Image (cartoon, rainbow, N blue to C red; front, side, top):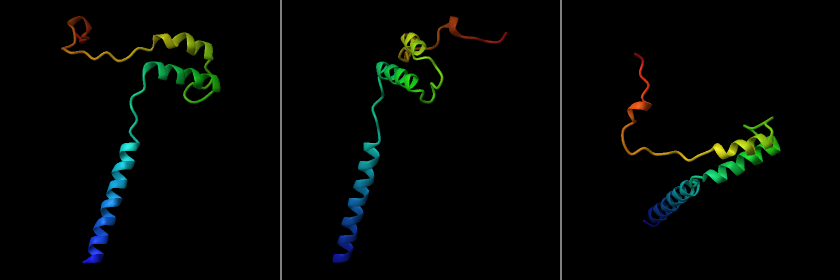
Length: 84
C-alpha cells in the first residue's frame, strides 16, 4: 500500500510539473511598439528576416505598422470583391 501511495504521489508531482511548464511557455501578445523596436534592432544587427535592409528605411516605415482592427459586423459592400 505504501508503494502505491508513493507512486501516486510521484505521478501527481510529475503531472503538476508538466502543467506548470506548459503554462510558463505561454507569452502575452507583444504590443505594436515592441514589434517596431524588435524590427529596428534586427535591421541594425542584420538579423533574419531583415537581413540587408537599411535600418533607416525600417525606422521610416515602422510608423505604418498598425494593430489589427477587429470588425464587429459583416464586411461593407464596398470592400467585397466579386468576379463578375
